[in-house]
Length: 122
Image (tube, rainbow, N blue to C red):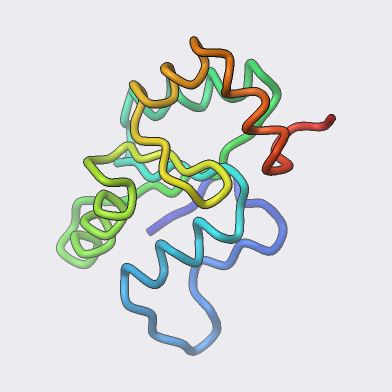
């Protein structure tokens, strides 16, 4: 698993500790206000990052490879997001994929939610 846009305090692999994939996903979601789990090269994740950047938030993107060692993490990321990847989490709560993000944005609830979790300057 590789992280892009790592924020201070985000740890991918705790020193010397083995974590179950579901525990790792939960910890990563708690450590950053906005997290996207996606497959490498996913165009929907790219659109999600662009929309979030346009409103002033920068997401931590966890790119999941589809190799044998990463399949469990891919499944854990999808399960935590209640669906498939890309999966967006804001303030530790699952938003869904691109459709969920667009729904929040078009309803006018995205920016207030991002402010609430500290992903935007007030």
